[in-house]
Image (cartoon, rainbow, N blue to C red):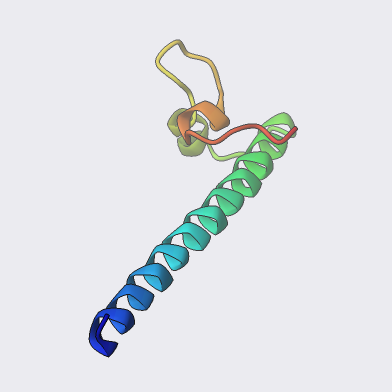
Length: 73
């Protein structure tokens, strides 16, 4: 394998790992945001526009479903 091929392979591996870590961090931030939105909703402190945005088609407030994140266990 030439040096160029080896470097390109390493670059691809690094880029894949960056994407995986980035996706993991984004999911974590989304979960924290969803949890805060739920807490604010319970305190009736969430703005109406956000309540509407996080209400699903069935009329149920479910920030986790609308943001497509899993509830923390």
